[in-house]
Amino acid sequence: MAGTTWASATRRASANRPTPVPWALTILVVEDDPDVCELLTRRLCRSGYEVRTAATGWAALTAVADWRPDLVVLDLAIAGPSGVEVCRRLRRSGGTADVPVILLSGADDVRRHEGMAAGADRYLTKPFSPRTLVAAVATLLPGPDDAA
Image (cartoon, rainbow, N blue to C red; front, side):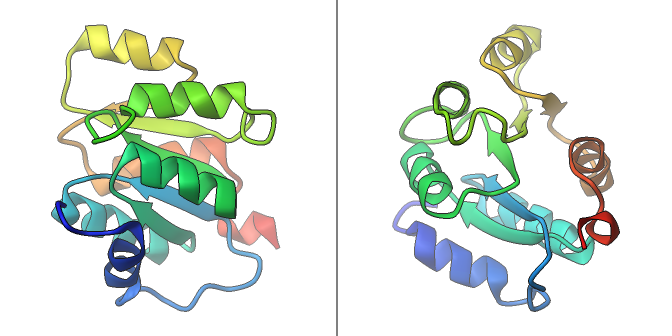
């Protein structure tokens, strides 16, 4: 997603999603592949979550500081600090230590272990079904109907 800022990626991803409702739970999707990001964003929005996106580790850390989502979906292979390092930083910060993190990767069991050791709550190996992601989110957050 070279040349794309967090703001422009957010605008693009938000173009086809429903208007967020005040009680919606919030998810930050950190993914550098625009097609995967769009797919995940649409599916999570259809499930009732408010979604914002970031494409790099630095953009993710900025978004979390500015917005404090209820959950972070985080690709391991991103520019800037890696997904593992972003997860570590979230866990070390008092304001985000309790934010659930789902790591995404096409990598092997070694990376899975590294991600879980960094404090991830779940780890999904690519390719996966968007339904699998929604199910993982549901295990970590109350459903939109429960948040009201």
